[in-house]
Length: 145
Image 1 (cartoon, rainbow, N blue to C red):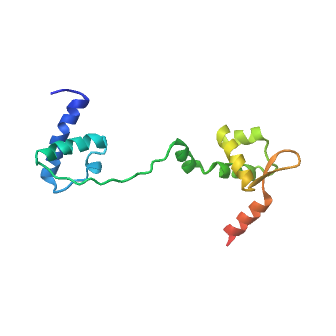
Image 2: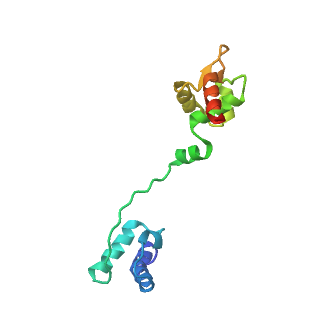
Image 3: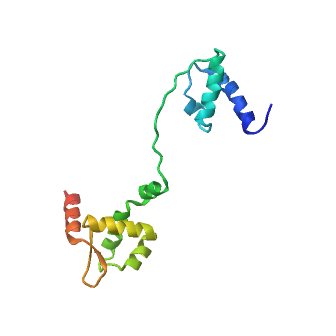
């Protein structure tokens, strides 16, 4: 028998039969989470062609966060990070200071655009970026009730 990937794939029908000898039904995604679905289907097709098993295919979509999504989940949206950094810096920040405060130049840039558009931030007379006073008051009123 071949070794490596083909050897493991060749063992898959046997593993399926062993599991089925202990359980009436199995859910392949739970029984073989590290196996490619195409490999499991191939093994099931092989067994089904010999009338050894019967199976139904259950299709489902699973959302998986990309790297940026994981970052947003952990740290908040780009615009929220910009707003919070400027809210903490009462006197405002320059663009460079904001980038340093957030620690991510791209997040600071994207966040500025979205925060300006939503009127969460504004530019002070001296050119520094500041949290919008009207948004701060609205946010405060909403959280106080």
